[in-house]
Length: 266
Image (cartoon, rainbow, N blue to C red; front, side, top):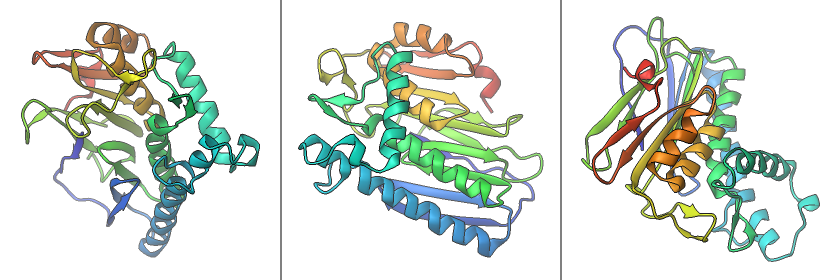
């Protein structure tokens, strides 16, 4: 789980909003640009997230994913976004050697990638509309572009699952124009990460994995896969991914991190 951390100093005018979508809370912080245009772009970004939920939700009987599972629809009959997510998820399966999966109980289930992909897409749309800084937090996973103000980077606090209300680390986007932070763990949703080999909850020594990288789509996938792998294997694999840093917290209160993570702390 990631929480926004405020910084001091002058900043461009901010347009902020909080919405409940996909069964979680999305918060938007948009800086710069023409305020009316930003509000309109934010309306469209929220509408896009709601459309994604209508297409991909496994909890809605009328979603395209649910209809696919029942055999009422083929992939060819789905919206183009379904093919896009399928292609991205297939690549995540390849890179993770199957530790990330698009299937549950034999059916197509893009749950592990959709929120990160949809959040990143919403943030990109706001940036394209003229914002100088964008932060979109989708249920604790954050995509950031630009900055909230001159010499002021976006910062994200990483919740400590073993110390409710405490922070395990603060991630800074200083020096980069885009950064994403995604966390997979048991603190908020219980044992929701599956072991693709067994189809059951992953048996792991981890309580959370936070992945930091430029893209929330991939950071979300990599956090899920590494959590299922366990601490040692997950850390070794994350170290092998270019442009990715990570913090892994174990049930034994041990903190493990990739070699480059300290450069992102602040």
